[in-house]
Length: 133
Image 1: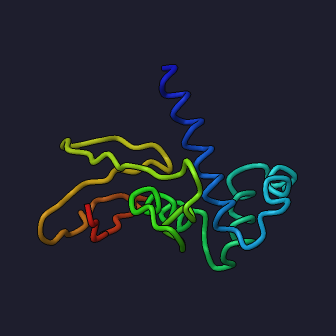
Image 2 (image 1 turned 180 degrees about the vertical axis):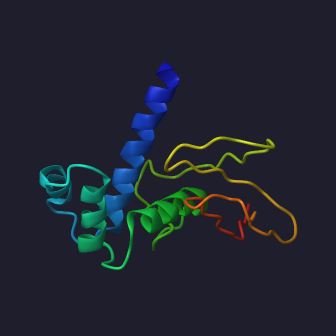
């Protein structure tokens, strides 16, 4: 699916721009990831630990990235520092079921309270956000 390929590349670009903006020192960031001997997602996690927060995992950073795409804050972990071209309009999911791949996310509007399903799966994360929109 050609559209899928384009959207994957675009999302990867946005993710790495988010990492650059969140890093305390972005100079050499991408070089360090490329030269990291782990040569997989752990290379990115090492960059996150070195330049964003030593206690932050790749998964935690990915959650912050997805929240940032929703909230578009001007500063902090939930935004893109007002970087031109990095302002997003979320698309909310309205279906009843969906299979997600690693790193995937859905934004769903709910009314009232929510309880995580007991059978949600070990690597599924639910985040509740008061969305102003």
